[in-house]
Length: 199
Ligand SMILES: Cc1cc2nc3c(=O)[nH]c(=O)nc-3n(C[C@H](O)[C@H](O)[C@H](O)COP(=O)(O)OP(=O)(O)OC[C@H]3O[C@@H](n4cnc5c(N)ncnc54)[C@H](O)[C@@H]3O)c2cc1C
Image (cartoon, rainbow, N blue to C red):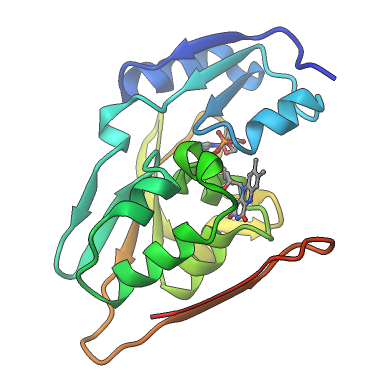
């Protein structure tokens, strides 16, 4: 099956993305890495008239490794997190999580913001971010807001995002000096993969 016809708008900035999202209303869908949205389009589970592509928006692509909390832009890819140098237990755990996602081709395109916004219960980032006590930062026409992942994800594939809102970044607290982290993830039924990572 093929997607319905849609227009593709490559946003030049956050304001431009918000403008196009709000102008198109219900008919618009935000495009991050397209690794979950692509299959949904092909199956016609979603039928947008316009895709607002935020993958090139510079403001969403930054990583700020501050001392107390690091912030990771929504369109930072799994591969970029996998390839980052690590300086503490949180960054090491994030590298292990990123490296465990699917294959490099998916990791090259898929984004942390897209993963948390999609809220697939079998995805890696939502559970990691929840355990790490992360906050999700959101921007919409009415301004900005932030909420813990526990409140952001309401149920499987359901978040607190209102129409026209964009996840801008996630904010992850640093762990204390004596902290340790481990992540394990069982692959989906039917797959022979099983991953374990300890940091
Ligand atoms: C073959 C395959 C295997 C995979 N295996 C795994 C796996 O093992 N573990 C895992 O965790 N994931 C896996 N994934 C999913 C992958 O990690 C996706 O990249 C991720 O779930 C969605 O990120 P994306 O950037 O591609 O989002 P997209 O597909 O572009 O978007 C997904 C949804 O989020 C919305 N969205 C995207 N960005 C934003 C934003 N900034 N603000 C608000 N809404 C936004 C979109 O409108 C859409 O509704 C797999 C995908 C594929 C194709």
